[in-house]
Image 1: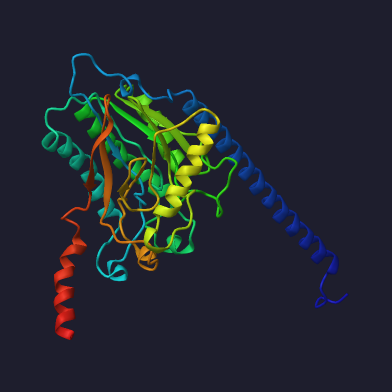
Image 2: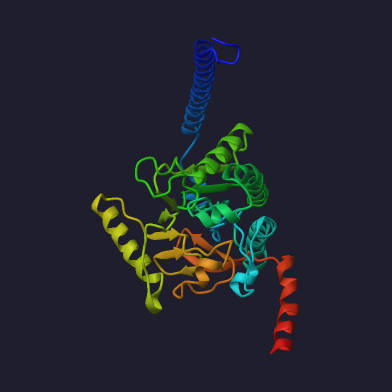
Length: 369
């Protein structure tokens, strides 16, 4: 063998050593990932166990009338469909709406302010034992559609970290003003982690559940007994206010809708089917409350919530989805007559910057015409 000829045996040994190093490094990475996952799984199980041990039932004040209070009523302010971190481009919806993290924050803070104003200025003389704030899902925009991944303000974990403090502050405003807050909680369809809806483990696979559970744990750790959460492990939740039996769900189980009836057709059909199911097991309800459709419509037996996000590009492209400005539902439930007074909570804020562009754009359009 000359000096120019390669040492095949040495090259083979080098390649084998290199392969061995790569395999060893790969195994170490796999072991590290497995250990990390094991630690995360263990922490998750500990968290789930801690959440399961929390009080998870309605407080007694929601069903009991105080003696000597003839004008007692419980206000209900329904929150759903905030779709946090979604971006709605005003130019793509003909300048009737816009949405981003800043706008969402303005509208969320307006929610308790408008609710308190309704109770104190428009409904004077009523005694409130507390307030019920049902939260009915789609708090995050999520990643179930590729276009949302492209336009959302950040990852779901980032959104959770940011918005949990904002919602906690809102709940504390309610607690300071009304003294007691009961929050029945169900998940929506947007923050799920699977591409397709699932039946097994659907709730715990959802960031709505994680948000509600973290808030419930934090309020319990702080010893704040003014606030009681009931985070459902099912897609539906039943609770009572005085004699009124509510069934809370997000609303995505009701599909279809066309023509002039639009969302009312699937909603009323779905309500009827759910009523039949509950009657079959001797567990009836009086009123179904839901979100999902982004359109406030309060009927006698169904209370469909509006949304914080409001009109978007998807709704514009679907003729059956009619425009409605961002609003949420409010009503009073009384011991004697159940649901009485109902009103919208308008959450759009005059300080939203996109509104300043509308006069200029309209003027430009008229000039061009």
